[in-house]
View 1: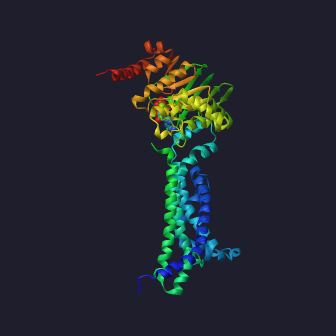
View 2 (view 1 turned 45 degrees about the horizontal axis):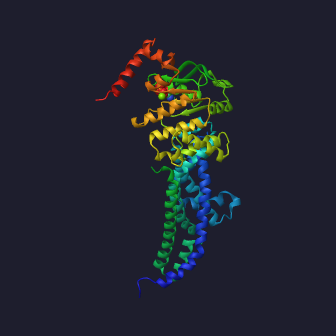
View 3 (view 1 turned 180 degrees about the vertical axis):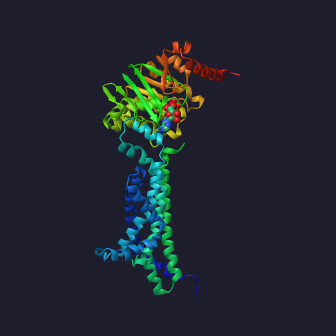
Length: 224
Length: 253
Ligand SMILES: Nc1ncnc2c1ncn2[C@@H]1O[C@H](COP(=O)(O)OP(=O)(O)O)[C@@H](O)[C@H]1O
Ligand SMILES: [Mg+2]
């Protein structure tokens, strides 16, 4: 008897490939929404908009201070009890919602730090030639903040892809959910889970490669 | 013509500018000297509304405003009619030398990109950096960065260029090339208001030298008069100290 049932693992690959798109879609949609939300939160924090600033701090504190799994259960099982119209929130929606809110809290802070980190004298130089605040943001501050924030944001995206696996606890059949079902049928737990682990690993490595290329391009202006 | 009357700026109750009156004719080169912490930078920054003054009138061309009542539009106008050269260059780090110079023309003056870049290339020629058009600030020497900073100010075609200690951050080896460029601008009768500790520049280039201390103009006059026969004891003390150190530095060993 061989140590590993390689044929079983190879057979699993096409099955898992069918569920890969759902995993990637949840991460992509979650990331897009989280980016938008995080930018909004970051701007509120940078400009210290009265009222909203305190609310933002509370939001960030809560979503960074509690486990993602707890947040997912809260949305999936808890919210429908509180808000009657949500009786049929599905697992995919709840996952995307949880990922968005959870990761936007982290991302808001790194975007804020990146904006604040842009050299203040450049801001003054832009104002001194008669730029408006909007032009200053668009042309000078945000491009430089992006360079600083992108590596961290990519790390959050990678984390988010791995975190989609929690969706299986809400009954979603994505990569992890599908593997779980297959393993339960075959009892080949090690083979099944090492296969799905390699799936995640390859995706993450691919993204890390993209990240390195992106950073090289973004850093072009700063090489001495 | 640029004119300020009764300019006052306070920081935390302390008057850093204590009633400044100053008029600069078109084509005039005015140098401000004085001890540090005297309000020289604050004065330049107020002309450009990088600081909001607490009282005074400001006239630049046909703009004439009570500084406390200046609207957003007035402030933008004042900024477009003045150009600023910073001590630490303050180049846009995400833009090339060419883009740094063209940026204001494109964004503020709304020139088409080709026209702005053509103008920026002319200016790069004049500042002797035609070969550095596509270089980013991080790859330029201090002297080159400050020349681009001056080029950015030249592009603005402002009524006056304000220089705030343009050579103070430079390694000694780069000071001359920046002063040389400023001298050429002066020879073209570009109106300039220059804060500097370079006394030889003041002596050779200025039409008028102003000595400031404690937020006030203590004494002013043509360089010959101010350097040879200062009237106020404070001016004499300051000049004695500065010239002593600068001469000492110049003495070869
Ligand atoms: N943003 C600020 N807040 C508080 N005090 C300031 C600020 N800017 C300048 N000052 C103070 O105002 C005085 C004049 O400063 P400055 O105009 O920079 O002098 P100078 O350029 O002649 O050295 C100094 O005492 C300085 O500490
Ligand atoms: Mg100063």
